[in-house]
Amino acid sequence: MVGGLVGQLNAGNNAGKITNSSFSAGTVEGYHSVGGIVGSLKNAQPTYFSSVTNCNAAGTVTGAYGVGGIAGSCYSYIEECTNNATVNGAASGGIVGHLNTYGCVVGCTNNGEINGETSVDSKGYGTGGIVGHIHSETTTGNDTKNYVIGCRNLNAKVTLTDTQRSGGIVGNQKRALSGVYGSYTVKSDVDNAFQSWWGQNPNGATNEGNKVFEAATSREFCTGEWRTATPVFIEEKCKQCLLCVPVCPDSSIPVKDCKRGEFDYDHCKGCGICAKVCPFGAIEMKEGK
Image (cartoon, rainbow, N blue to C red; front, side):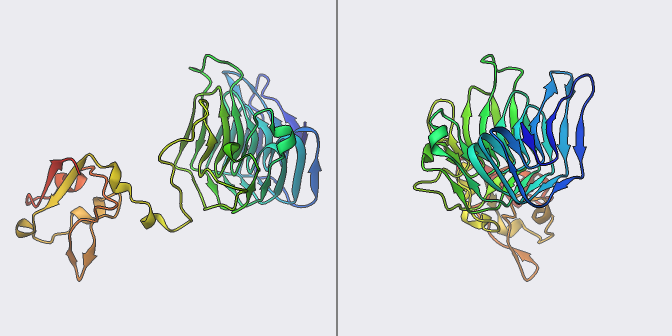
């Protein structure tokens, strides 16, 4: 267990913390659990959790497996951290190599290049822009959820020849109840085919619906296909008060010359908020698309 600042951080009977710290140059090298900030981040589940917060890593982080820009392995919390280092090894990720039981990654950003090793990776490890491999040490699942929330992979290079276990956010998930929420990746340059968020989920199939585009191109992602109800604009009733415009969470009500137009149905998800706030009955909801 090797880290740029700390080899292993244990929770023990207290919550160990690393905050506002950085590893800015040079190389971190080891065999397993190798991280730019900490090698292994432990907890004393389910009471005490160690954490790494607001830390930054640069340079190069290299190991055989369990290699991460911030932490090699994590059983606890990593929040608001940024990796700019190049990461090399199996089960490698821009933030965490191995995300284990109770491990969570929140609000982190990867800018570094991730290079997976296929020789060791034959064990089923993964390579990802944020997390290489998610693995719970228990098969029961209910109390051992792992989460990746609000993270961004901004680097266009995540390399692993086994493309079924390489992903822009998570490379592979095995035997864990996990969730990826509010995270995105740029279109990445990955060897052969590329799985945008997940390389592989527990049953071996690629997750559906994970279309992730380059930064600032959300218009290309037509979320309107999710809609189960549709707002209908009744123009003759509209007084152009524009109360509906700021409450639309998807900016699907275009305005030109101080007047609203027809809905942008490519992006409207049919939440119905606009119909609720309209005081003149100029918006009605209908079932279906």
